[in-house]
Length: 217
Image 1 (cartoon, rainbow, N blue to C red):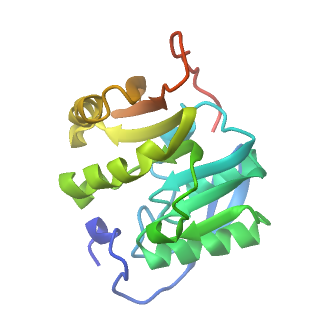
Image 2: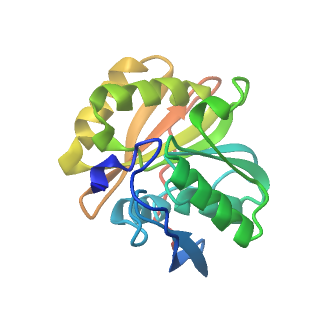
């Protein structure tokens, strides 16, 4: 199966889970990955850049990992915010199954690995963390962001990591235009060829957005 089809709902090929040792939230963990999902061989560079350049997640409320893959972002959110509900969203059923297995094996009962339509319409998010599937195509990507970014609570942030070579700056400009007057977009970090973009719902807020220093992975 081609690697750029990890966003298929039903990946082709046999589902063979493989063990992987990875560091998340400062802990060495044993998880499972498989072919047919994004970055099955380990933590990809973009996700690592995101996880080391975001602010600490809110301690409670609903948090979203958009495009969860085998779950590194969702698992990190659940480890760091055990009293929050973490929604791990993906269209890839194999990715969702792996995220469920990994969360269960780690005793993380606050993870909900579901398809997009399974998230209740009234859920709003205290934070969104995402390494979005850029290769799905511009129209699909824009539709995804139009669906989920407006569901940020007042004062909440979305953090997106995007490669400069895959259009991070043009995406920044598009979000500035599309969400003008509702959401503010800023570049939080540049590292290893990736941009970390911070999207904030500024409703009810005044003053500048504070910067965030890199943290340990």
